[in-house]
Amino acid sequence: MIMGFSGGSVVPPAVATAILLLLGLAAAASAQLSATFYDASCPSALATIKSAVTAAVSKEPRMGASLLRLHFHDCFVQGCDASVLLADTANFTGEQTAFPNANSIRGLDVIDTVKAQVEAVCTQIVSCADILAVAARDSVVTLGGPSYTVPLGRRDSTTASLSLANNDLPPPTSDLADLVGNFSRKGLSTTDMVALSGAHTIGQAACTNFQSRIYGESNINAAYAASLQANCPQSGGDGNFAPLDVATPNAFDNAYYGNLVSQQGLLHSDQQLLNGGSTDALVSTYASSATQFSADFAAAMVSMGNIGVLTGSQGQIRLNCAKVN
Ligand code: HEM
Image 1 (cartoon, rainbow, N blue to C red):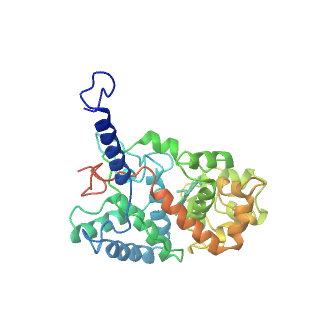
Image 2 (cartoon, rainbow, N blue to C red):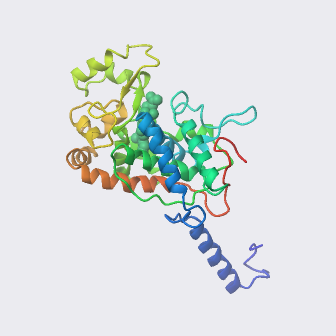
Image 3 (cartoon, protein in one colour):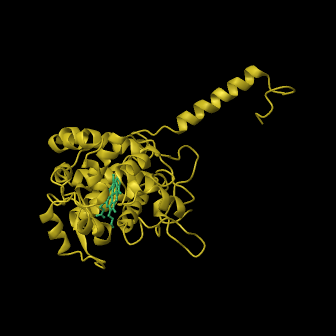
């Protein structure tokens, strides 16, 4: 309809400019999330999510880590659109069998419970993508981390992508340059990357994800490597896990960075942040300043939560997070 502004167009240039301006404004407005998005439409949404998440994390602290990671795995794959939650069916392949997700992501059942409780108070108002963002924040807070306001108004995708999940989620074998590039492709800075990696102050990793580090790398504390080897043989070891933060495994604090200083990063990618490269100084800062880490982590979570969001009339509000309406 707005085609053919040039010669022979039935739309005068001034009108065309006005239309383009309006379209531009509409696009900008729809890309905008708002902290008060559900204040009128579902005033109890945030309290409902918080109580369900707090209950789940109190029952099992690791669940806080699993919910935080779900939001990350959502946002890095075609944006924060709850695509990670779409379950495979006979004629639909989602992201859950991608290498970083298979036998690894947890908390889908908790999200289903939260969603059911939210649907019970407001039918088809609150998106699964927003539930993931709020659940991540509430998990961090429940485990003692910083609070921050979560901008809201994301909508849910009708698609998912196995190949993007395999390509865009960083593997634990990543070197520093890979990590910087991976986050930069999502519009996140190196500071965001270092601060967000602090999420590894909670939760666990499977033996297969740190095996080559504890048997083959030199930038690891010898006693730490030996203690990990006791539960993670050189081959096999499926089903064995170790805490990502050896110091305070269930507390959301800045101990992760102190671990890096003492060469006790669990994953190869963790120790890359303090290995003689450009991020060493920031790791030292976070190791000595919990306040700086908290502020940067909170800001980076908000930035991550903005990646590729669907808003306005895009996508849908799923009734069941595991499937398209
Ligand atoms: C910087 C690049 C990153 C890499 C290479 C990476 C890799 C990994 C790996 C391999 C695991 C263990 C999975 C398993 O063994 O099942 C893991 C766990 C985890 N990741 Fe990351 N991750 C990264 C960034 C992030 C970010 C940005 C967040 C959140 C903001 C995050 C949150 C977590 C959490 C909380 C866990 C523990 C989950 C649980 O215990 O269920 N990670 N990550």
